[in-house]
Length: 141
Image (tube, rainbow, N blue to C red):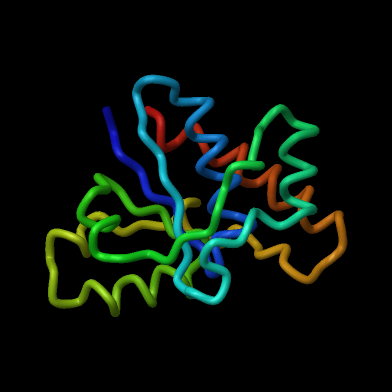
């Protein structure tokens, strides 16, 4: 079983949705968790728009509560999937002295960001979800 950690800024939009998509797509082959760089939203539910969009697509984010990335999660994961280059850069800074962890870090998409829909219109959440779904398969092969 491959252990994956999806990471975004607050763990209320992109990373919980990516975790749900990877979990359903990967089935018993994966164990997926999500976290955020900021502890500002720790304990908060998924963003209402992302939660509603997820439900419309058959994913359940109602039990999600935001968590901040920590060393225990980083050690647990086989791969750490950053939602954008800024998140990846911060994770690399955090793991600079730990070559095991730094070797696990990568972008969710090959060479581009999953745009953060926070604070934007519904169309941004839809576009974000589409991108996450389209990018999931590369992590399951």
